[in-house]
Image 1 (cartoon, helix red, strand yellow):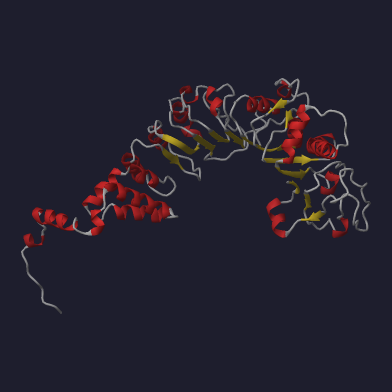
Image 2 (cartoon, rainbow, N blue to C red; image 1 turned 30 degrees about the vertical axis):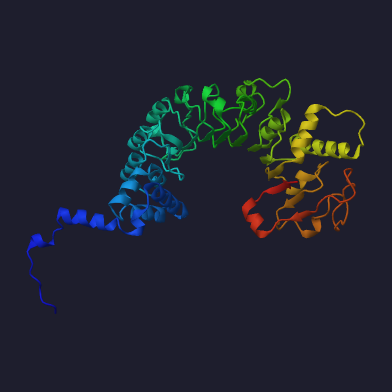
Amino acid sequence: MPALLRTHPNTTLTKPRDITACRLQNRLLPALQLCPDLLEYLFLLGASLETEDYHRRRAVLAYSQVCHDWRTTALATKSLWVQLTDFDDMSWRWNEEMLRRSHPLPVEVGSCTFPPRKTNSISSEMGYLGRIRTYWLGFADETWDILEKKLQEPAENFECLSLAYTPLRASKTNRPWYILPRNLFDNRAPQLRRLKLEGCTLDFGTPALRSLTSLTVINLDTTHKLAPSTFDWIALVSMPPFITDFFLRDAIFTATSPSDPHAQFSTIPSSKTRLSRLTSLHLEANISDVAAFLKFIILPAARDLSLTCSDALPGAEMEGILEAFGDVAALSVALAERLDSSPIRMEDQAQMVAFLGALVEVILKPGDGCCPLDLLQNFKFIRRDCTLGLLDSEDLDSTNFCRIDGIDDKPGRRSRAPSQLTDDPPLPILKRCSQSAREVSNGRVQLLLWK
């Protein structure tokens, strides 16, 4: 074994003048002669090249510990530290330090996994309301009071708010009804653009809605007496002048009967509502609600249109949904081939242009006792370049599939009349879905239309 070296304790300590000498010596190294502006650029570049948050944190901390000069530059680079806030995996103490180092830059606060937050966490986070740009939050019943209070304070930099009600004790009955305050952000959130609400809704008279470009509301208690009706949503989405994206899922009041008082609460529009700026529309609701929504709007020039209809049954509602697209397809062919000499109304032209340029998906969930094939019996018009897909199930044999224009019929199924749209190319084939498609669709009939 090597001999034990006996030294005086004071000899192992670095003297202050030695530290100064080391710093002066280090400055002679080429890497340490870079100017602060170039160092700042390299730090930010290095952080951006890291694809995982863990490696980004390690890289930034390593840069800041190389030497005194590098640490000084790193601490002065506020945009470097604002990237390290992580409310999914890091502690509040860590995030509070990152918020301090990045002051006063706008920050993204919250967790995209939406766990219910504690009251003290919400209070601490909302203390930075003036700096928050994007806020994701899952809240429980116990935290609503403090959240509602904080949401009435000004938020000059706020751009995106995403709230999800995540009850600690799930209950299908007596579900509370949470609605955002009417004076949201004290009506002082000029940058607010995107609003996503899950399990809660908003006051339709909130002035903050005027600046929205995207609105998403999902998973409301659709049997609650305050749940918005189809006509309420049409009126709301037509008011904000800049809204382009609208998403509703399980958020439309479900009337138990036509005589339900709430079903008569909203005023039925006297004419169709034009949604001129809307480019993306997603509706997931009962087929009667979807049909009513389409009946009273002019289809926007949307590049993305998705409809999911539950409890779908053959009948007037089903035909109304299909005709919303079929009439446009017929008009487009008539215009292109000059088959119709009568003038076309402006609103019909707008629908035609919107339909031709959109990516459309219609998903039909058959109601109880309804065969999936029955949903397509009265299909009159369809775009020539679409594909119909039915689930591959045991009760639907391959002999039941045919071209819906009567060409290449399979035995055992009566063919349909030839299409009036065009003879070349023929209308697409009604075909079975793949195994992966069946797993994704989860027992639904999918009707896909695209350009």
